[in-house]
Length: 112
Image (cartoon, rainbow, N blue to C red):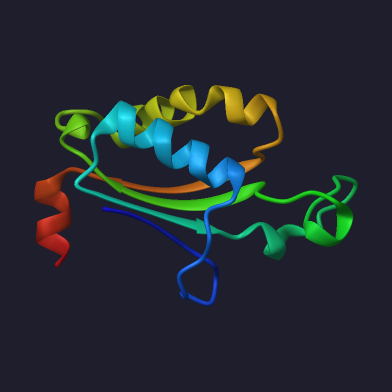
């Protein structure tokens, strides 16, 4: 159900933050599909913010694909708000950005 990949699309080991993100999203949204892609290394150049493993920071940027019935009848903006609210504690402790793809099961099936 839940997978984590690095940006080379190979399976990756879940880091501490990714594990927490996975747990929170699974508990909150009971997803049919959850994919988490750690893109933190792509953002190491952000100035003046310290980013990337070489700067002592990691797990700051994720791309999340989440398919859940919890999004039925909810606008795209409110879906994003729901995810950001669920992960509020992570944003307070270093999570910087999420790129979100949030779909209902019907929307996901239509794209397959």
